[in-house]
Length: 231
Length: 317
Ligand SMILES: Nc1ncnc2c1ncn2[C@@H]1O[C@H](COP(=O)(O)OP(=O)(O)OP(=O)(O)O)[C@@H](O)[C@H]1O
Ligand SMILES: [Mg+2]
Image 1: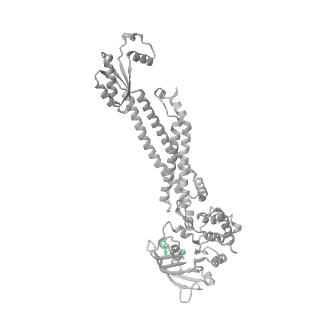
Image 2: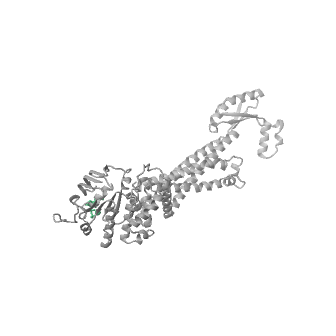
Image 3: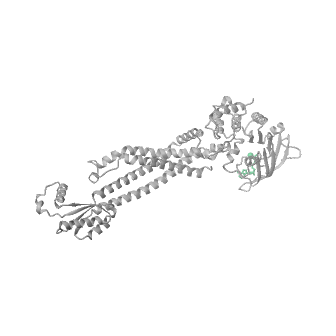
């Protein structure tokens, strides 16, 4: 599903985002990306979204080489990848419903499809009662649910999350974690960059650890840290 | 709970085409941002309107001046006075010779009696002392020209003909008219160009405001996979709306005001009444059905240029 080969991203200012990363994430997998601040987690997510060009290496999504995708192809690539950020990134002038519907409007969805799918995902994330609320009337957890609904409303095969629980209290973080697990159990591949060691330790999923842009550890059913690795 | 929405196949995409399905979304975006930036919107519309008023005015002016010129060419022409001792046969020969001069359209002979009548009519009095044998006026030819602007060459040619005494070629009128016509055309073009550029700059800035107020939204749109064209269309529509509104307002105003303006210019109290009376004017129906589509397209074009330049500068899509 996701195949990264010898990927290196060096920023214009010389900062090393990721270095020589080779990774394969299979369809339906759940992978945590962990590592200290500046280790390259966000950069890894960004190169998957094709927010920037790689300095070296290749990326394949579903067998397709996306390394050199241009302006024309990138929007259609992103429709196959939902994305959730730490800071939710909702539109303050739109209601919950509109924020989610918006993601369908930009594709060629008909209004009938929109009217069918939006309530469906809103009830899946437990926001059906809040569909008329504006983001500033929601708690952080509810805002992140809304962002999650927006990310999956087009039913992408891949969901990328960059510290989705970073702004949430532990209980709410767990709610979001469970939602992500549920989305994953329906077949969506989930990649989640996080600092939340308790979640990582408890979930027993694949853990990819990064340091200075390198992948330094990659274990199935791992924990946030382990004996032979320390940050 | 099996609620996963259907996976829609990405359809073949000619992204730049305006899809009807999206039009409602675009229009709602556009009207919202026009409203949010209403002061800039209004000032853009006013600038375009000022530009368009100038376009309409210079178009109406040049087209009327051309009409005056045509009219004068057929009425003014020039008067060729003949030598006094010329016989009737001599006068005929001179007439035939004038006819073969280049640029001469037609000639008509004027007897001294006719000339006197014309004079009396012009002065509004009966000059009995000069009638009959006492008539001091000469035989003459009224000469009509094809092109009034070539009058001086024609005068030179005619004055060489044997039997021609003198020529009255009201050259000043024709020269002045040709000059005015050129000045109006050139000045009009300059003003239109300056105002046109100004309109584009102001529309660019109006749309920059919209782009800035929607920057967040655009970033999110890109994350969820909006094509560049999907992001661009609302801004293009916004530019076109401003341009077309700016064109329509002066167009409609001028359309209804034109007849009154002509009437007041030529009416008894008009400043130029003496000068303009008797001259033909283009009618509303001759000018506006022709000028309207040009003005509207021009407005739309200015709008598109404004939004395109704003997007190039401020929106990396
Ligand atoms: N836009 C950028 N321009 C220049 N350097 C950047 C940019 N973004 C990130 N970097 C650098 O790349 C390296 C990796 O950053 P990245 O954001 O991927 O880290 P991270 O693991 O996500 O950190 P955090 O946990 O704090 O979010 C850092 O050294 C950072 O300074
Ligand atoms: Mg980060």
